[in-house]
Image (cartoon, rainbow, N blue to C red):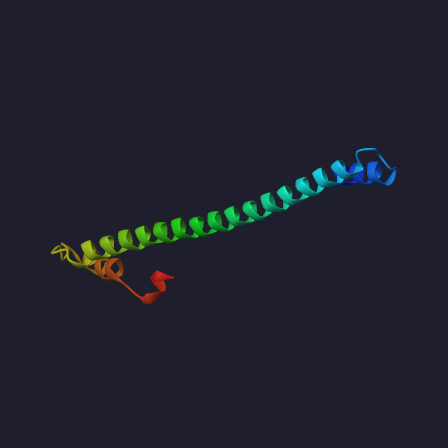
Length: 101
């Protein structure tokens, strides 16, 4: 874009016979380029927001899976067959808000 602008400026400053047309075409190209940049920025913003939404959905799925696992362990009727198994059960059922961070 800069090379095109400097070429245009050079032709116009040297008094090219079609200077008015060169200048108007350069203005049109500049305008279209600015519009393209704005559209690209808007698309990028939408993509970033969509990425955040997908990350949120993924995190929700992870939390739902975690809750289902904890729910299954907490609702189990298996109370163990020996002392070691009985001692491990509370650790498997342990829950605190730090798990959600």
